[in-house]
Image (tube, rainbow, N blue to C red):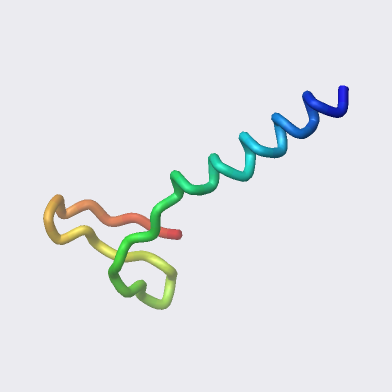
Length: 43
């Protein structure tokens, strides 16, 4: 059981690497527009 917990902890810690930030300022509502696609999204 201890090994399973360690494996789960390792997978969860490495899965956060896939969350890449992107550049671009946000407006007062926390949103911005991707000028390449014209898509607007909020954080």
